[in-house]
Image 1 (tube, rainbow, N blue to C red):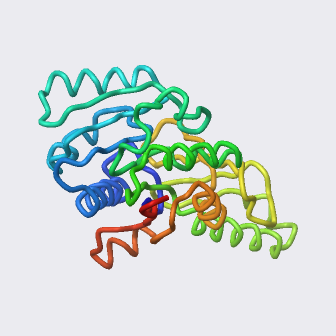
Image 2 (image 1 turned 45 degrees about the vertical axis):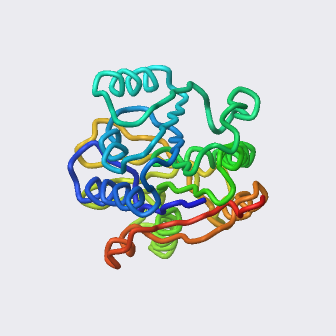
Length: 264
């Protein structure tokens, strides 16, 4: 299994973060996808990556999304564009449903499983993270890979802690103009609801708003040691995690890597 660790999720504007995000997706697909493989795409809603799969010359595509409209949109796009690969689409929630029950015929058939968006949402609870990784393992063939992209929670948490520390070190007369739970830059703003001293393993939510977006989106911090632990419990073998900026600077084509051992 493989996962990619992006510094920030995709914004709706053509920003630097957007370009890096698209670069990461293309690079991960290029390094892991080989002609005629079967790919299972979790949270596949939308058609932004359809061309990437076509270029990669996959053999079969399985799209799974919790949104019926997202699944329908992707199915209609595939049917109208006459892609060179066969495809199936299912409405299901990777974080709350057990695929072995409703997708039994797909067990151990995927060469690759990916989650290129919304992976961080599974960390709302330990149970949801556990179910997602269990579903990934049940879909993968022995020796298959899981890869994905999620915000770099370690970097976000470090910046958050720095703000909180600076707030408490200031005199009381200066505090009214300081918001310790808010991380700001020219392109984005991240806001936490509750101040905490330790990195919560699950359920730590924050609001992310990019400069040109109308509204903020809710995300969860991903505690990577817990992600690794739960992945191993699900029968997946950890390979690599790398920050997107470092990945881009190194001109490499893998960010986070996991594999399902042959014979598992």
